[in-house]
Every structure is written in structure tokens, then in C-alpha cells.
Length: 477
Image 1 (spheres, one colour):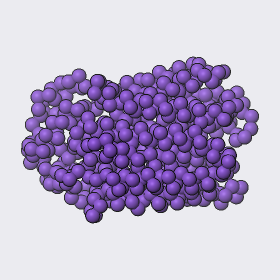
Image 2 (image 1 turned 180 degrees about the vertical axis):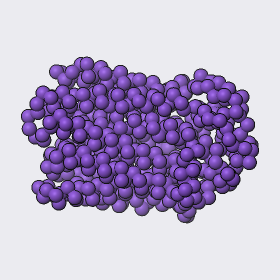
Image 3 (image 1 turned 45 degrees about the horizontal axis):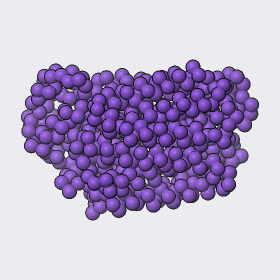
């Protein structure tokens, strides 16, 4: 793949994440401090809407895997979904304040519709990455481009949103971001194509989808690890607006604080291909998690008496998140070939829709948990906060995401689909050879796998007739 193609693919992520960053970072603040929704009610809203919205993701993945058009499997959604998402982004920040129950009901309805429209665009966008290249290492550099541009969009949103809102309004800022997002996503639609040799798998139904997911153990392990790291990331994206306003009386420095975090996240993203080549993908991800855990503890011990130390800790935290997020997403694309090797079906839509499902659940946890904690600590919008509330805010900014992120180590310790194993599976698929437990599975620095075992570390139950060429259909039970 040329860098022009990778960059064209990345523009879509930049546009999507300008809108997503705006909503993920500022919607909670808009609800509590602009619309007057209590922190407890907002917490429940985020939890219920995101979980319900997440149920649509596997359905969307199945629709993507069943799509056939003159634009391919994924591109039709990149043409049609962005304008709908743009319109609903504007509507989301146009809910009127001061109407009590009516305001809350409208918040529920508009946020749910926004989430569904985002799914209709995001699932096919990321599913497309597995249809652009089969090379595991090239996927790391491919994924790095959209994720880095996403971080740039995140920086831009956090640097200019509050000043723009002060000069314009929430609604007008939403219009600006929505128009930019549509234009950038349409660049991806226009410039990026699936591989010419890409052959989609046959259609499948809901029961078959469940069976395919259950047989993809590496996918399951990655989703758990990514859910935990993304929930921690979401907490650190939402809380700074409250943390800077009340613990430091420095609301004007929110763009600086979040901007530093985003810049170092970009640096970590750029370092991720080097880290993956040097240590392997799994070890690179574990290293990133270790960094975010240590910095969360350091930030908590430092306290909130002075802002510069917290700026230091959040900067180093961003490096860890950048390495972890890019590496895990690159590993996710590798599970497409594992699922094809294991079941005979190639299902990018399934893999990436379950990934978006996980992201919705992570964002539900990451948004509702800190708001629930604020309510428990006695937070009241616009008032002088008690010492209990301030200490709770500090712990929510530091210890809570650090501990949640650290739990991601557990599933990664069981993950064994390293680069060598993935390359061998791709060769078997290309040659239509049976999986006969190659010798490299005996042991490796990245995790021991006994002879006769699948790359997920389980006993092999796949016969020579179970491995099909791409698009060959599901094996017989």
C-alpha cells in the first residue's frame, strides 16, 4: 500500500473523530452545566443509551458482511451515513434547556439516534481496514495513520471548542464540526478501494454469527483488553473539564491539559510500529499499559496542589495510551484471518462490529462511572465543591482509570496469535493447506503453545476439511 492510500483512508477517521471527540468530551458537560441535567441522571442516561445502542453493532456488522454493491462491501456506508450523522450531531446539541422531563427525554432520544448513525458509519469504516492488506506489519502502519489523525482531530476539538462556544454557541459549533466530518469521510469514499483479490464470504444469519464469534478466541481476548483500556481513556477524556474547573479553578486551561494529553498520544501512536517491530505487538501493548498504570499512581500521589506535575503525568500517560491503542487495533485486524482459518468464513463485519459494540460499552462505562462517582462525592454543578468532592475528582482522574486499564493485562497474557503465527495462517489460507500445528507453535517468546494447539492456545478441533479458501463457506460440524 502506498502512503497516499493510507492517508486517504485516514482522512475519514479524522472527520469521524472530530465529531466523536466533540460528543465524547463535551456532551456530559453540556448536559450537566448547560441543560441542567443532574450528574446522577446523566450517568444513567449514558449507561442505558450506550448499552442499548451497542446491541445494534453486531446487526450492523452482519449487514456489512451481507452488502454487495458496485462500490464494494464497505464504501456505500461511507457515502450515505456521514450526512445523517452530521444532522444528528447538530440536533444533539440543540436540545432546549430548562424543560425538566422534556429536556431529559429529548436528550435520551437524540443521543440514541446519534449513536445508531455513528455505528452505521464506523463499523464499515474500520471493517474496511482488513480488506486493504493481509500483511500483519503493514496493518500496524495502516492503522497508525487513521488513529494518529483521529488524535489530531481530538486535539483540535479540545483546543478550540470552549473558545468557539464562547464566541458562537454549542449548536453552531456542532454545525461546523459536522460539515468538516462529512467532507473528510467522503475523501475516503472517493480515494480508497478494497484489494482487487478481495473475496467476501457468503451471507450468514444471527445464529451463525454467534457461532463464528465463539470460535474466535483471540478476538474475544482482545475485545476484553480493549474495553478496559478504552473505558479508562474515556474517563480521562471526560473528567478534565470538571477537574480543571473545580480542583484548580483553571477552566481556561482545559484545552492545554487535554491538548498535551492528545499530543503525547499522537507521539505514542507514531512510536507504535517501532514498538511492535521491536517487542512484538502483545509486548508493546503490555508496555503501554504499564506506563499508564504507573503514571496514574504517580498522579494520585502528587495531589492537586500544583498543576505542572499533573501536566507531566498526563503527558506520559498519553504516550502509553498511544502505543497501546494502535497496537491493539492492529492485532484486532489479525483476528479476521484467524477466524477464516478456524471456520472457513472471512467476516470483517463481525470482527469490527463486535469491536464497535465493545467501544460503545466502554464509553458507557467510561461516561457513566465518573458521573456516578461525582454524584456519590456530592458534586453540584456551578457551586463551590467540598473537600470530599475535590478529593473524589482527583481519584477519578488518576486512580480509577489507572486501575481499570491495568486489568487489561489479564486477557493479554492469554493472547497467543503473534505475528509469526498470523503469517503462517495467511500462508495456509493462500495455499488452502490444512492446519497441521506447525513447529513454531511449540513455544515462542510471546507465549507457549503446545503442539497440536490452535493459535488461541486451545486444543485444535479443526480437521483438514475445515480450512477453506476465502469465501468457501462454513465448515461442516
